[in-house]
Image 1 (cartoon, rainbow, N blue to C red):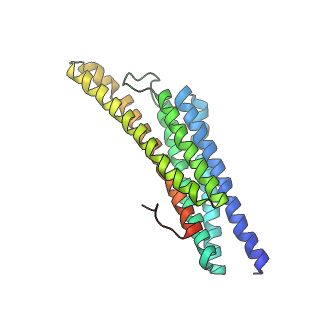
Image 2: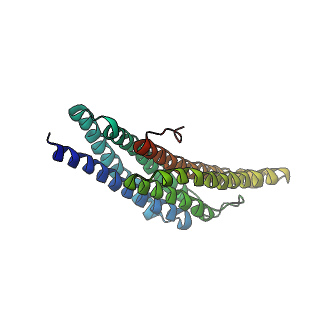
Image 3: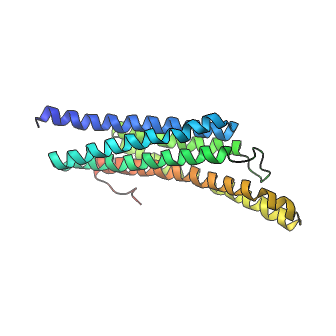
Length: 227
């Protein structure tokens, strides 16, 4: 393959990763909107749209494999293809988490009296959405400093998720201590959904950090952010 054609293939891979990132962040944005509104039609569109994300993932994964097999990239090109391959996996998993969130938001009642409301979690979720968007911007620009900042800012998201989880658990314990056994029993499904929502929002942030870590490796060969 001529050098110009090879570079076009690398550029095409970068564009493909960014396009998949835009698709996934749009899905996540819609899923977070469902937390605020409980919109069943919007949630259904997110869930059904996961197939598009999976198809895009498979196509781009095959492109990475072809570059490995046919071009045997070395040095910075090898790091780029390797990082892109791993970032695709993180994006596919963020798509799965968006599907989960849409399902949690519409599976039961909209007013779980468990100290935290689904609409309140939308704000935390949007913090993680911003992290994913920033990590993708760092990938596009090859910005090592932005990668490190994403990892640092994820600590605040983790703290927000931890506090939300504590609030839900404390509310349930207090109700049980008051002897409200019947009320606690009726809340269990909603409490479970709230805790799962918090967990998956936190996981989105973890994948944003992963994307930043892969990018930092791509740019500097540095593994400092890799778990």
